[in-house]
Every structure is written in C-alpha cells, then in structure tokens.
Length: 321
Length: 84
Image 1 (cartoon, each protein chain N blue to C red):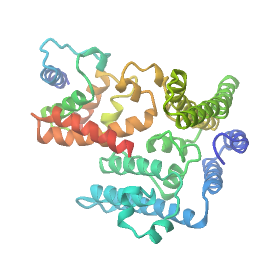
Image 2: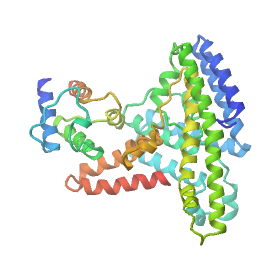
Image 3: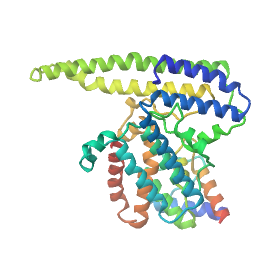
Image 4: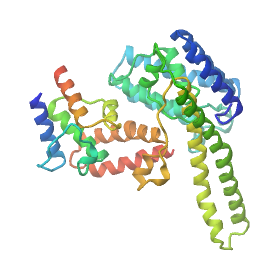
C-alpha cells in the first residue's frame, strides 16, 4: 500500500473515524499498532525481509535498553558504528560489493524504511545518553519506528513528540473546519503525486529519450525541459507524499513536523536546505554537523571555523550517501 | 539571576566580538550579525565554559525552533545554573 493509493485513502478514513472515538489509551494504542502492522505487511516483499526488519528493530531496542539500564563507557559510539555498518549491508551499497561474495550479496533481503529507522535510532541513542529522551518500552519503540505515516519517507518525527501523542489521555479534537482542511490537504497531496508529478516525470523521460537519440542537435527547449522537469517531479512527488501523510496523521490527532516550505523560492543554498526535506536537514544539522563541530571546536578553538567548513561538507556528503 | 544574565551578555559580546550588544528577551539570531550555525555552537561552548554547565544536543536543537529566543535561552541557562 503506497501513500498515494485508494487503499491508503480508505485506511486513513477508517483510522480518522475509529481512533478519535476510542476513549481509552490502551485501545487507541492497539488500533494504531494494528494499523502500523497492516501497513508494514502490505509493503514487505517476503518473509526474510520481514524477519530482517523485526531483528533490526529488536536489536536496536536492546541497544537502547542497554544504554538506559546498564551503560558503559563508549557504548554510544560503539552502538552507532555497529548499527551504521549493519545499515550499509542491508542497504546493499555498491561500494561494499567487493567485501562480500556474489552469493551472499544476493541473499541480503530488502528492508523497508531502514534509512528512517536509522535516523530515528541515532536520535534516540544520543538523546538517551544525554538524559533528554522520554521513557520508552518495546511497544512504544516498535510503533515509533514502524509508524505507518512516517515509515517509508519521513518526515522524521522526534521520539518525545511521538511519545506525547502515544501516551496522551485526550486527543486533540478536530473541528469540522480543521478536518476539512486536513482532507483537502490529503487529496491535494494525492493530486500532486498522481497528476503533476506524473506529468513532470513523463516530460523528463521524453526529453531524455530525445536527447539520447539525437545528442548533436541543439534544441534549447529540450534542454530546458530536461533540466527542470526532474526537479519539478521531485518536488510534486515528495511534497505531495508529505502532504498526504501529515494530513492523514492530523486526522487521528497526531501532529507531524512540516517537511517542505516552498523550497524553490529559496534565496540561497542554505535557505533551500531549510525549506526542502526540513526534518532531514535538521537531523543532519543536530546529530552530524553540530555534534561533530562542537567536539572539534572544543578541542581546537582557534581552528574551529576552518574545520567547521570541512565538517559541513562531510555532513552533506553523508546525507548524500 | 542578574549575575547569570550579566555573564550571558559578556559571553555574547566576546563571541560576536561586539561590545555594544545589549540582550533583550525577544531577540533571535536574526537580530545579531553573524549568528549562524557555527557561531551558535561557538556561543554554546563559551556559555558552557563560563557558567560550568552542559547543553544536550536536543536542547541546542530546540534553541533553533520558531518561537525560541534569547529569553528562552537565558531561562534554560538559569534552570541549569540553579540545578547546579
């Protein structure tokens, strides 16, 4: 079930009706947990993939439990490094191909949503080690990681915000106007993905085919369409998806962070990255750039700025990977 | 509390190299020249050293959110100083 589908529309409608009607937290949690499970099952291609995903979540939960209950020196970097290495293998990055024989490489299952799970896990590890994380159980962690609205492509919600919703005795009640605004946003998101993104992608494919077929003939409009259509496709596809999931979550009383703010009117590159995939930009800023720059600037106060630019490049490189 | 505010003002002046800075609670990064992400961390490090406190990543991150300003930064620092 993808976010832009009739299935997800019905799924959202059922949740929007059922969850706000449930007065007890436990029942609401059961319904949302079941919804997360159903959504996940609809995406997982086979049993090995499901088992791998479950093991990843279980192992990362145990690491967090260890960090909370029996911490030891070096546990934070050791945990993060181990999980990042596992992540590289599960994502089947081609630069690791030389380390594994072909037969093993082929057997690594496809794991859904693992990138966002990694981002959330690192945020939880760092915040837990600094005493900033809300209480967690296996069930709350499982539902945070597998939340149907954010599983495949964000936005990256911080755990404390999710926990506040998860344990909230009374959900915010949407009035008719707010509910209509959310439904409007959800349907607009679907139109963005199904119509505008599809048209832009079609234009891109056509212009690419034309350019490849006849690379020596210079036609300005072909280059203009080729150059801009993919960016337009990316924007409508991703921001449309984000509109769908933010609106669907809002209908059950869950406020997800915004992920786009008119990125193509940005004044410069920094402004652009504060408008495009905002939650990922903020995650990179907080957990890669700021953490590493703070560590470096504390040790080398006179060279902090020069090293800072290097770290900024490194953070963006890692984000690209 | 006034001591803390005076120390925070002194740190701001040193980090941004501007002896004329006067802090107001409603001030944000937009009000001070050169307050970018790197200067923000330099400011945090200088505040930690001057006041003997430690900021968590989540706290530093929250300072960048809309609605956060010098007033909320000073309130956080005062809470940390009182905790000891």
